[in-house]
Image (cartoon, rainbow over all chains, first blue to last red; front, side, top):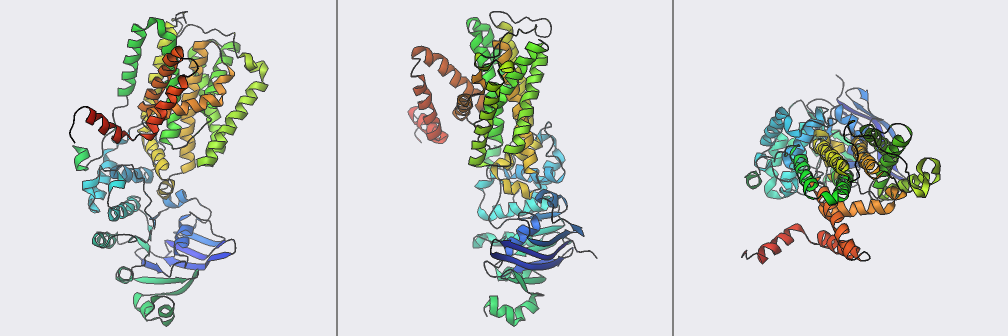
Length: 246
Length: 322
């Protein structure tokens, strides 16, 4: 079976700084992979390399067997790759519903259409409403996104990614900055992600990581330190020394 | 109700509504101000130009100080077309639209690779280059004397451009209404929504798969077409195109008008053009040297006073207790 996402010896240097060192990873449909590591290990850089925000210094990114290393971010999205951001990255003044509709327009290749009103796509509007319902955001559909609680904005990020119907989803610290009380809804949303979706999650909350992931990759100083099941990682003495600190 | 519960996004207003109001107001003005038809025409042309600027500044979020270049391109193209090829106004209008769009497409392909302050400075540079080209090309543009000597054929072959400017005013009002309709449709389309999304957050739109550069270039080209239309209207109704139509001062004034009326809502562009032009007209006749004081004061009030605060103050003055 071809991996839906594969990186081959991915490398990134910023001047003299070597932040990603030959990272090779494979992600198959249905995978739940957590990428962990201390701050500065190069986790977000890895996501930026895969999603096309940054160009690698060397190595390749393959989506479903196709080399997308030279493709733009937009082209990778169309090839089935979606991501969320560590720091909430949304259009603050657009109503939540419009924001989700925008993701749907993009998925359907409609944002080049410049004449028909956005109100004239009732099927997509209904899909957006249903999606917001799935994420428990139906009551806020008409609100400007910035008026939502932070945890809810994290949910909107995830809803936008899911709206694109990706094959691979990269979640960059979905729980970062979410107050205690709002975490449960995010956990539920994570648990409800489509079963055949390949998910790579970066997260510092180890509770969440060991509950959600079926496989964990530990990154340290830009290189893969360990790769295994949660149990293997928990027992790995190197990982314990370098990161888990137990 | 929706605003309270937040359970549904507000629908877009029908695209024909604002243009219909503009048409009605314009016709009333045309009817009751037969001595001021020159002013009415100028208002319509300016409103169309500020409207096109709103697509760039308010909708796409790109602050520009080079918008006069697109206007001037349309004006010189339409004037030259009338002088050397054909006097038909609608053909000339199409030529102006094409010239504005073409310059926007060509310059945008370069400009839109940058954003923020770099973009702003480069728009100034592009406009200055266009201006100096026009000064060099005296044989075509008439240089500092302006492009003159062309007369327009009757509109639709029937309505001659008369001395009182009756035809010109109606023509300008009609083109403004059509331009507003076009802008409304474009802004409320999936394309327009994507451009508004880019304005608010480029990284978000790129993550949704939006080809950011291509969308911005398309919007810039639409704005160029509308600015070109305004330029053609100006050339045809004044029968002269001057260097001032390419000037930095015009670009800056347009931006002032847009901020005065409120950017990003299209109607704000019309209100800003109206207020500024009327202020100019009346204040300049009262005190020709100091009328800009009034414009400056109005601009300060608009920029520094948040609308909510102004509204609360007004309510308090009207006797509301809360």
